[in-house]
Image (cartoon, rainbow, N blue to C red):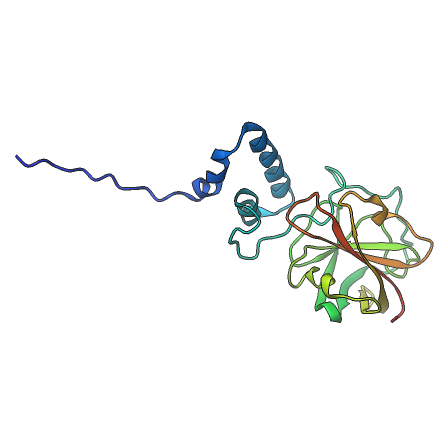
Length: 217
């Protein structure tokens, strides 16, 4: 009788197997740190694309992978002691910075969530035209705040408000600040707008901010 040769078919690795393959070479302490980062990314709405980058490194081939949350000031975010915006000051609904290719809708935020495709007003900071610091943040992605890196001093930024009025600002400073620098939320004795975004997928890397003052420069 001829022998029957059984060929064992190789199973195609599942997505989870491919994602977790790099973890098998790590120690328990490293796995714990990565697990904590994964929880933070999922809580911020980063999704599976961001997990691929975390598990396989920053050069993983991921299409349109969302960046890390631009602001990480605590588990539940940090709000200034009180809102400085007067009830009569219209909310900003759009930000336009032609030199950076930015033309983006603005929503009121909770200090934690970073939605895709939108800029977010940080709660408790002022609104443009209110007389103090107004802070907005968004992902560093095309169509969002990636264009902040293309801005230069005196470039114009327009805040479009809910009543249809528009306020023009000019870029006064471009800076990198620590991820936990609370001064970006501070009140100022003058009208100022701060636009903030991230610099990498790591939530503990510096943030990039653009500070703008009223006028066209």
